[in-house]
Length: 200
Image (cartoon, rainbow, N blue to C red; front, side, top):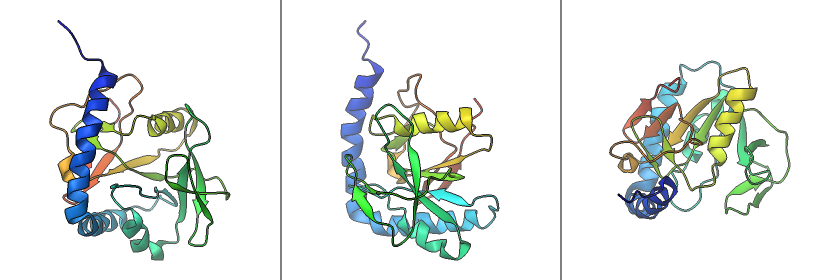
């Protein structure tokens, strides 16, 4: 019996899920980003060990993380953005401030052209789909998977990961995964948080 390779399954899913995310983004993207921000703020009030927060500069129809950043302005956090240093390597994170000069990366996202390197305590991550097991489907570059693995191996402290998504991006069943896919700690949608057991 012919079996479709995992990479092909993922590629097919990406096409379908980009359309689904775009539809909900155009209809409710702004209001859902604010609702997501409210959920995050409520949860974050009880988090005392997070000083460095990594987020992403949204492109296309990704959930906008800036409402979260704005809601935390009284917390005196350090913020950073992911930067692709080279292909097949983990991301690095450069400090972001309101007056930071940004340039467009080869992938279309805005990134700091310079600035201090930070190790985040919490990373907000974009995605195309997620499942009930803690797996996410990204764009195929594997940057966040390599980054999560790198931190697991080389950083003594626990770095918490939060995928930002619309609830319609939930995949029914288990996403097609391979040996390089790393679980995230939680998903946050307009319906609230979902936490995963990343020990298994």
